[in-house]
Image 1: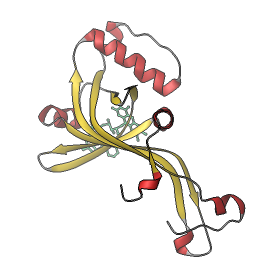
Image 2: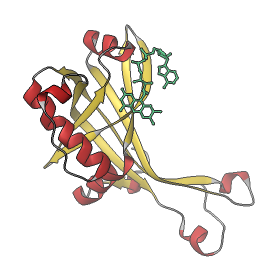
Image 3: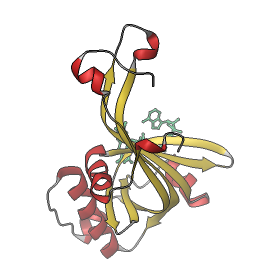
Amino acid sequence: MTRRELEVTDRDAIRSILDKCKILHLGLVDQGMPYVLAMNYGYELNDDRLTLYLHSSVKGYKLDVIRNNGLCCFEMECDVIPFSGDLPCQFGTAYSSLIGRGTIEIIENPEEKTKMMSLFMKTQTGQDFSFTERLVSVVTVLRITVDEYTAKCRPLPETKKTTGSAPNP
Ligand SMILES: Cc1cc2nc3c(=O)[nH]c(=O)nc-3n(C[C@H](O)[C@H](O)[C@H](O)COP(=O)(O)OP(=O)(O)OC[C@H]3O[C@@H](n4cnc5c(N)ncnc54)[C@H](O)[C@@H]3O)c2cc1C
């Protein structure tokens, strides 16, 4: 990370980013060509081990890609606040974000799928939902085992909060 001072390493702050983002951008590779799409997610963070859970319909291009190549990356962001200034270089965007890489796989085991869908709904809604195996039989559930990730926070510049001018990005 070039601006190391903006890196977020505190686990509670990372958890807060994971709680807020709700949507990630999933990067896949189809025979050397990148494919990026938005998806909602659920997560588990145990110590530093991050696992993400996604759901989708049972057919589609992304599933074909994933079956051929499970390598993936993802990006998510929250607290996005654009700010402005008098000069072009004084415009910018405050944000918190997380980027990672890992392996994505389709989960077939019905019992595992029900647990993952509960985690998915917990992240998305903050509420506890339980699923039957019948309910999850009509969706595809995906798991991303995250190998590495970093989090970053670019806060709103202090000057923006008070005087309306901003430092360079
Ligand atoms: C905010 C947000 C949240 C979403 N959450 C989920 C989720 O949780 N689960 C989920 O399965 N999907 C979600 N989607 C939809 C997702 O991004 C894909 O559109 C969808 O999953 C179909 O992807 P596919 O690869 O199966 O494409 P297919 O339906 O097989 O379509 C093939 C082609 O259609 C085009 N295409 C597909 N989707 C889009 C699109 N969204 N915009 C423009 N072109 C497109 C692409 O060229 C793609 O190669 C979300 C989308 C948004 C914007």
